[in-house]
Image 1 (tube, rainbow, N blue to C red):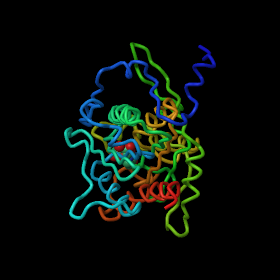
Image 2 (cartoon, protein in one colour; image 1 turned 60 degrees about the vertical axis):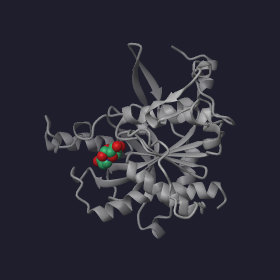
Image 3 (tube, rainbow, N blue to C red; image 1 turned 90 degrees about the vertical axis):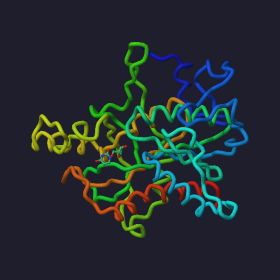
Image 4 (cartoon, rainbow, N blue to C red; image 1 turned 135 degrees about the horizontal axis):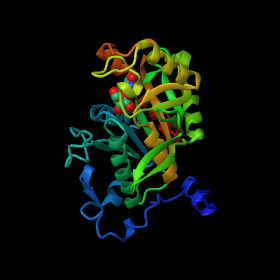
Length: 310
Ligand code: R2B
Ligand code: URA
């Protein structure tokens, strides 16, 4: 059905206070953010989070802890001697959440279902806290297509395994399609902060394919199951590459769809851990991998510093 103008206006970026597009929430006595063990009744979310301007999501809890520690240095945040950044979501063992000045660093786990849960709860958190003009980032890892491993891809558009630019979500027995558009201005500002010659690796804007599985979903030959051969795999990955896809991961479709639906400006920045046109297994030594995984963090921290005039 053709959308009315009112329905289309749902997708205009929000300015000012973060609003929720759910009429039920404000009528509830208490809203328990179950997976991060916080609630708008038991916690003073305004006092805790009102100054938040940036939320950085990433898959791994340790990586998001490291990112929080890195931000303490980069943003020159004063922490009382002997104290460290602490996990505000310690009452739950599902996700970790740190706050460093105006930045939240939060883990999202692996795959769309895990990211979806934390996205809902973070969006509600910043709404309850009375935050305004917040930008979201996903900083992550991915498999590259035709890129030197260690390259960084900023997502221009996220597509599913059938190359469709929307996330399908089964809701009330129907399949709803949520467009997965991302903010092109934030992507351009991010890429302008990278300098491939100085950095020693390239940072590009490209399309990202988001799959529901790491093995068969990403045409790997090394899963526990495989019903296709190497030629089938290469035909698929080459086709995808020709369509402008530069990396493959497992959360960007939902992240983009929810940012767009919420009217929140968002960007996805992922390092590539291997070239999927050359292999499937990830065998890079740990220390090199650690350095690669810090690359999206550095870029997003540089963006935040620029915005804060630091
Ligand atoms: C990238 O890395 C994870 C799989 O190894 C997944 O969360 C993703 O998107
Ligand atoms: N994450 C993915 O989803 N795929 C890869 O190949 C590497 C990291």
